[in-house]
Length: 179
Image (cartoon, rainbow, N blue to C red):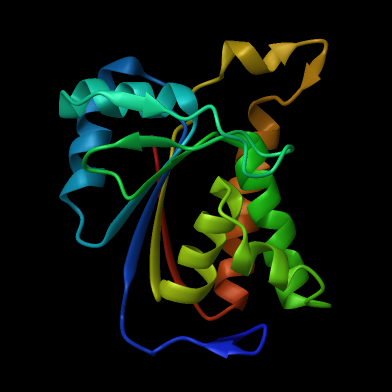
């Protein structure tokens, strides 16, 4: 696929993205077992989700305090995951980049060059991936259910579905599993 003037090498690359914890906590091990057993890259979006993954893997989660972009929360490191990002804000930015890539292509230099979580995830999804498996957790995040922060469950589901739609329009093979 061609994007922003660059071309990928055309090889099949699988990217697995985990976005949010399962609606039933009892499903966490099943979800993570499936996610980590998949071949390819493993991207985790969401602090709570990353914490659950770290416990599952029995590995420490090392959060960075370095903001590569003042609007995008820092990434974290977790052995067994290729990328760990914040959730809704980061995925929202990736969706913005995806829409732009399908349209005017004004933001390509941003995500192709920056090192924040949204840019790193965008490069993997838009440039490297041929097949993308989205694991979407349906849990409601209590941190998002405050009057001061209008990020509810519906927003997370809408982001995931709209991103999947954009990725399909880019020619990516998409599969989605909800938990």
